[in-house]
Image (cartoon, rainbow, N blue to C red; front, side, top):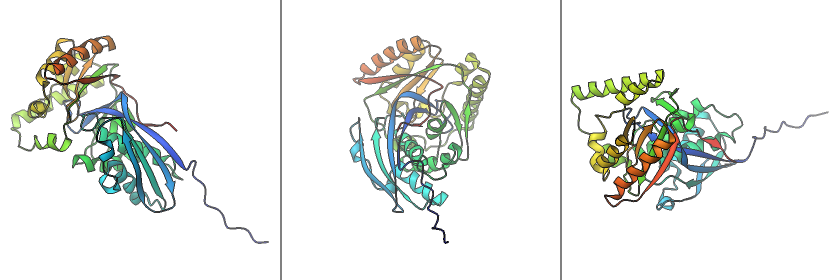
Length: 320
């Protein structure tokens, strides 16, 4: 008696939804190398498995102006490009249909382009016959996010994938231990495009300035490893990127001064800006400082939103 042909194994689900949190890229002293996730704002991606060998974006909406104008061509969208790389690099025969909901404002310095990319990968991974590890998703996220930034850097996608503070290189993401500190991020209602912010860094730096920055980075990383707040505070000073980008953020000097005056271990520009962050020893301290930071933005005519989060923030997860 003959046997019927074996049917291919069905995936665990045909569709999935994932949420990726916002992030503080660079953490001031770690340009393109360090970042940490934050509670609160984030992007959602719904991914459905389809038979066609392609990636199709069927809709983009969101809470911020401009979300609907983001590109729907997969190769021009961070999430779409990441899923294209997933198919190509891992020999996925089927395709994906993708819908995005943008909860992170565009051009905010909170990792919006990265969040869409990471949420899409985590959702798509759930419908694969053989899901990948987070380490395997990381290089795909790097390539996806590069569509928006114009370069490959993991300071946003890495903390979104792994949670907390992460050291991100082009080849690996390394979660770092950090004391139970609290971050206050103040997002002014002002758009600063990542590409413009990166153009401000094009001129070469003198060697002495690079050495000074390396000193601060070493102190900061040692402080994290030891849980030494004094070393963290001594290291959390950006002498490379912040001076060149400060003029792109209205009121930045006053906002930073407000954070430091209210007990911040350090404060700087979040990602490419214009959001500004500070690290604090308690949520109460962060709340008081955030109000002062908001007042400084108001003095230059900008309304703003506040996000208070543990420095050891969440990672992207499935929500449906």
